[in-house]
Image (cartoon, rainbow, N blue to C red; front, top):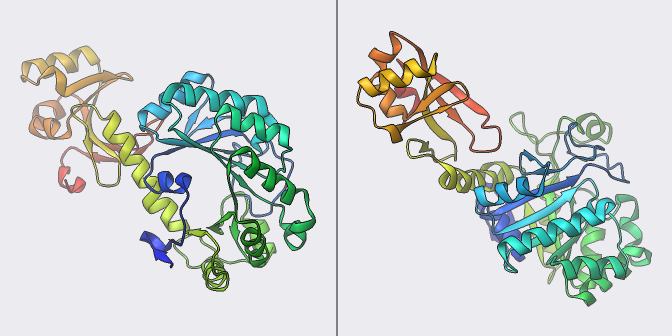
Length: 355
């Protein structure tokens, strides 16, 4: 039976890793941008692609504490380890798996993506460290001969050591060959809607792909390919994840988790998972002195980055007094590392927030 979800995704099977992702409860741990492959459809950004850098969600990782801080901020129930090719930095991966399991316990679900075919020794190390699930990404050039590749051996050995096993690829022509292989080996198949990105757009066009519409980055025909596969392969455990689902549902839920967990007393969390507050800029001592004169409670504002942030509704109440002395505005930002600002609105236009 096929189940339809929000924003065009559908499935007949969801593994534990996917369930946590759909709830926005999985941290993305990008362990390295190094990779031995050059997939034309790779969407990894220029900042990361082919560079040995590590990120926990949007946070650059300089220490183990950065990873734990990000996981706690979003109350992560699991982690997806990705790249690049994670197994090019195997010891780093093993260390991060142990770190997360030690901090959050065995129930913290960890899955790993790999474009390689690890041998039994490596699979045993991964499982022993605490890895729960492995998702293989076979080279597109091998899709028509997977039964005679090292992947078949690696999959069976991964099952032997106790890992949940699947294949994850973009949904594009010839994916049916991978679906037949997954069904034969009794593993799940995740199909991602093919997408244009800043780094792959030229190559995608050269391969004859075009966008589904002018408003998004999804590739025309990718969804239909996934639908045909699920109709043909009865018994295949499969999931199709649409581009709009990743951005409109999965990411939004992660932002909401993070916002609700990290919001200050005076921050307002929006339905999109952003934070609303007011900003007063100027000499901080003078600002706080005026706020005290206006009887603004101390828990309704905070001095940060050379300015004062406060409840947007507080600023609205004192806008006339504050605006005559200091520059002030309403601000909306993401609750992620770096707090990227989404919008700034003049203090005479609070209704623009629609709160």
